[in-house]
Amino acid sequence: MTSNRLEAFSDGVLAIIITIMVLELKVPQGFELAALKPLIPKFISYLLSFIYIGIYWNNHHHLFHAIKKIDGKVLWANLFLLFVLSLIPFTTAWMGENDFQKNTVMVYGFNLLLCAFGFNLLEKASIKNEGEDSVLGKALGNRKKEYTSIFLYVFGIGVAYFSPVVSLACFVVVALIWIIPDKRIERKLKE
Image (spheres, rainbow, N blue to C red):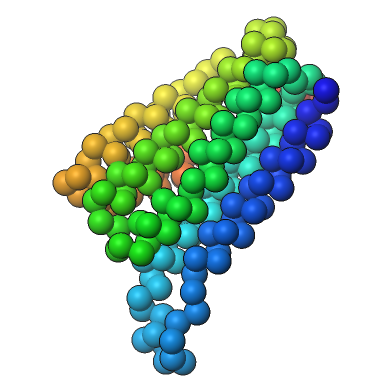
């Protein structure tokens, strides 16, 4: 099976995830600007999650441009990634509805950690299927960004109990690390 069909399916799921998230932003009662104030935490959590989904979509796209074939392990790894990404609307809404309380931020961070684990699982399954000498295998040799992200997620989850703001700052830093699509794959594809 080629990767095009799997990539198209994944694109559709990610579009649905974004749609579900935006539906959580309810229109406020009233027409005064003050009516928007209660939506600020919801909008901030939505914005952060929208950026995360965009990052995953972008890197998923790059990943599948380097993959020539897929097998059952790649299919299941991709499905696991989509499953944990599909939880983001729930954790986003819970966090925004509760003004970033510590438990909600911890669960949100755990969700992000699972997403990182899912993407790493997909990368590893793809490399195993393609081979270490494949474009993908060579491109993803340096895992510094991945390890830094996982450290920041784990730290952010732990510190959320004491300071949800510091925790959220960790999650924003990870987003900033990945906001520019992973150039490692692009460089190898151009060689």
